[in-house]
Image (tube, rainbow, N blue to C red; front, side):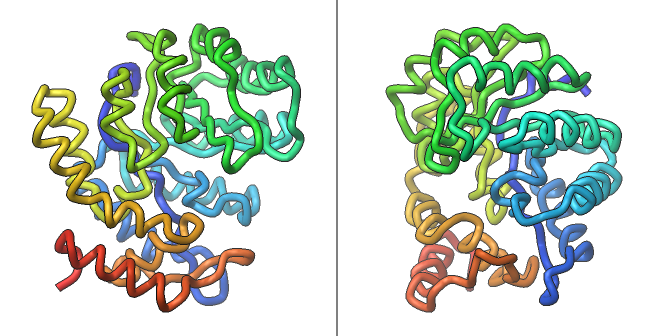
Length: 296
């Protein structure tokens, strides 16, 4: 599958769990179908929203394999291959590639706090080994480190580097790296409240938590912007800001899983250290969902 021209909304899919903590494949099937039938442009499994940090390697591969087989090429599937250990990320990338993912998401090496060259070599080691494209993930609030502008300038030239998922929350950083974007290397917003600002700098769309509950709307917002229907896109972004903020009123993916449970898509089960949201925050979330018509 050629991903060079991929634009729009890639959902950062949650991983449904049963009450005993096992993977809920029946709900996974349901939410995959929900995404495909509502026009999502791509599906990312095993990212932060997928609670991959609490899953075993065997579970990761099983979830990716399930998604690939059940989507059947209708949209591209990306697999999260992140680790603070480069060797682990390298091995996981190759295993995900074997089960048929169309692309990978590779995060900066968290906790270790590597130096500049170490971060570059972390990504380069994985990129050199794979045969599918990879999106580089910059989210310093989660990892404690960032992809520097100089490193992105180097990495963006690698033939397997497809794009950056930019989730620093900094328009300044996004502006500084915009010169790296072009036909061979793109950017996707990693923040749902900043999709259009980053698209104005050249981003191709978003890798979205919000799209778990509103896949059609996020897809259409991105497509409207890219088609020049800026005002329609702007209306969607602004109309859904209360919901977007509510989806992050507690640490992701706690609120979005609760929202999906309220919509009947899955059960709001988590793996520790994640825990169900407070009643106060749940009430806020429900009000925001009602405001955009997700609940009656």
